[in-house]
Amino acid sequence: MIKLENVSKVFKGDVVALREANCDINKGEFVFLVGPSGSGKSTMIRLLNKQEEPSTGAIYVAGKHIGQLNSWKVPYLRRNIGCVFQDYKLLSNKTVYENVAFALEVIGRPRHVVKTQVPAILELVGLSKKHKNYPDELSGGEQQRVSIARAFVNRPLILLADEPTGNLDPATSVGIMRLLDRINRTGTTVVMATHDRSIVDTMRRRVIELDRGSIIRDQARGVYE
Amino acid sequence: MAINGNYVLRETTANLTRNITLTVASVLTVFVSLAILGSTVLVRQGAQNATRQFEGGVEFIVYVDADITPSELAAVKASLEDNPGVLRAPYVDAEATYKEFRRLFKGQETMLENVRKGDLPTSFRVEPKDKSVESVQELVAYYQKRPNVYYVSAATEVIREMKAITTFFNNGLSVFAVFLLVASALLILNTIRTAMFARRREIEVMKLVGATNWFIRIPFMLEGLIQGLIGGVLAVGFVFLAKGWLDDLLNRSKGLNLLQNFSIESSDVTLACLVVVGVAITLSVVSSALATRRFLDV
Image 1 (cartoon, helix red, strand yellow):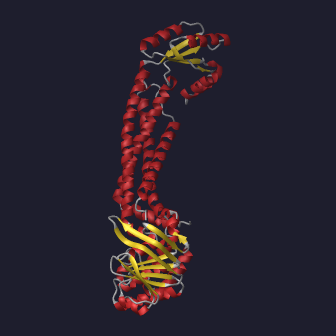
Image 2 (cartoon, chains in turn cyan, purple):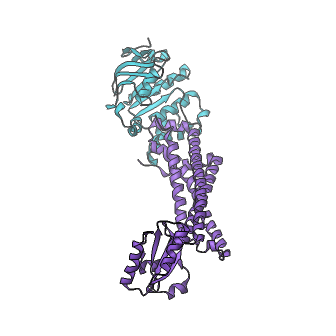
Image 3 (cartoon, helix red, strand yellow):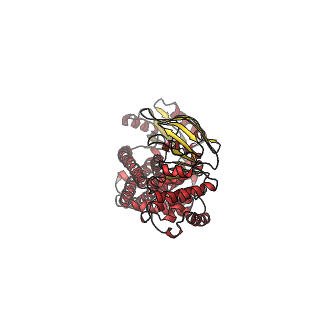
């Protein structure tokens, strides 16, 4: 599903964010990216949906060499990749329902699809009753659920999550992890960057550890360290 | 890809009203610049109508007798072509003469009804090598006395002056209009940039969930186009007003030699309107395309 071949990313001023990274992630896997701040976790996530270009190396997503993708095809790649962020990136002038519906509208899904998909996904994340609320009327955990609903409403093949529990307390984080686990069980590949030791240790999934841009550990059913 | 009309309409309206002061500023600038441009076209066309016979360096016209025989005509033609002082002297035949007559006397029904095609003298439009007043007068005097020549009509000082004045006037206005057009293009560009900046979070989300660039761009481009079109439509209104004023002015100054043949026809108004609307569309589409290009990479 995802394959990195000798991928390096060097930013301006010779800042090496990723160094000769190699890995192979299969369909349906749940992978944690761990490591200290600045170790290259976010860069790796951003490379996967082509928000960044690798300096060298090749990245394959769903069998496609995304470095060779025409720029007009990038939106279609991203429709297969859901994204969840630490800061949720919800639109504050839209309700919960509208935030999720927006993701379908802007890729041209017909209205009847929006009308059936959005309530279904809100049900899944447990926010049916709050569909008319605005993001600032919700708790952090609820906002992250909306953001996950938006990322998953289009049933992507891959879900990328960049520290989704970074702003949440441990109890709320557990709820979010249950949700991501449930999404993973539907066959969606999940790649999640995190600092959260207890989550990684409880879930016991594949762990890829990065340090100063290099992959130093890749372990099935791993722990944080 | 299917683009939801509802969505586009909603977003475009939101963009237009969100920054109402900027929108009004761009619409007004487009209007003023296009109104000037439209008036320039009108004046230019009017001056061209007045001096059309003397276009392209033609300094005098040799009319031949209506009952001239082909051999006599050939003799006149030869005398013009062999004259070293003459650069060109194309012949205007009966057909073309009648057409021109119909145009010049448009609206004057009695004239149009009573004149038939063969009634009008045909002519040579002469462009001399040396266009100084003295040499032209010399040539005119010479051909006036040639056999089978009915009449020689020279471009008078009045026409020369009129050409000079309208050219000056038009060049000045055109320069002015170009500056204003650049200003309005920049204003549209800026308005759209501002609208896009105000909505950068939405744009970011749209890109992340896989909206195509065109989908993101269209409401903004439409916003620019609408600004341009409103300005253009206002300017078209102004062109009609200007036509009314000019007609008024011409009626009151019929005695004035300078404006004798100056006339603005409805086809000229149409042309001015087409130019105005065409420029409005091009201007707004180009500047909004430029404005939406940034912000969209990634």
